[in-house]
Image (cartoon, rainbow, N blue to C red):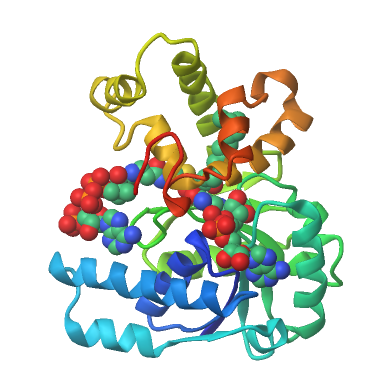
Length: 281
Ligand SMILES: CCCCCCCCCCCCCC(=O)CC(=O)SCCNC(=O)CCNC(=O)[C@H](O)C(C)(C)COP(=O)(O)OP(=O)(O)OC[C@H]1O[C@@H](n2cnc3c(N)ncnc32)[C@H](O)[C@@H]1OP(=O)(O)O
Ligand SMILES: NC(=O)C1=CN([C@@H]2O[C@H](COP(=O)(O)OP(=O)(O)OC[C@H]3O[C@@H](n4cnc5c(N)ncnc54)[C@H](O)[C@@H]3O)[C@@H](O)[C@H]2O)C=CC1
């Protein structure tokens, strides 16, 4: 697999594009606005700069990586020569199904179509294509260039060959994998949601301040980030979208707390909008 199409250039799409390009893949990154593509390129440059400053890569690798990434507003363009297409648009089943219809139409017949969904049904997304055996969940973690895992989700019709190909390319780009069944929230989103939800409720009930809930989990349980800080980092909009599917599958235990709903209603999505649980302005 040499050419990778990435659909959606947001938080995850730009990190996935960067990771692939750093491993020598040619990447074509697609989004619906020039602004999103520009922002993505800036984020990639910043992230590469960080890695260079930390001594992990040299200037030549930065230049080389950037030269491997092109951008487009046309989904057909992102598909037509790609061996693997990774979708990273917002967490909405209908939107993803519409995108996959197009991926199936424009991608070469050999291409694998992967979704970065956090919890939606890979089987349902695959069902709109004529190549369900070549559709798979490839669930990355934020920040994609740094996090070590890819959670591979095998839909009902995903072939073993497709799983092997995705295991192989994940390893090639420096990631470890786990293989999971196509169930709502897989392993990681289900586990993370339960943890985050309880922490939000603890904060909402006034048991401790925002900072102290985060500090307790960070220092007491040795997590790299506090849960509310992590929620802002992931994006509160994405979390709320993800909660809808989890509530449908598992009921009230995943019902989002009022605080999350209100922040999203106010347009405070976390780091990406400058305000969430915390302020970043
Ligand atoms: C509750 C509501 C209802 C229930 C529903 C909830 C649904 C929840 C659904 C969630 C759905 C979406 C999430 C998902 O699908 C999966 C995820 O991605 S979950 C999030 C996973 N990520 C984490 O948990 C991150 C945790 N944080 C960390 O690991 C670290 O804090 C982090 C690596 C981000 C930063 O490290 P830190 O030590 O804190 O800071 P440094 O600045 O020192 O960085 C360390 C190291 O890493 C390099 N680096 C960091 N970021 C980048 C980057 N973007 N690009 C390049 N490099 C980066 C940095 O340079 C440092 O390198 P050194 O070599 O150590 O210098
Ligand atoms: N935020 C996170 O930490 C993680 C998110 N995910 C999943 O990755 C996917 C994307 O999430 P984020 O990158 O956080 O979202 P985001 O909101 O940062 O980015 C989504 C991007 O998709 C673009 N987009 C919207 N409609 C589109 C269309 N029709 N065609 C092409 N592009 C379109 C948007 O303009 C935006 O740039 C979701 O499924 C999410 O659940 C998975 C792992 C971690």
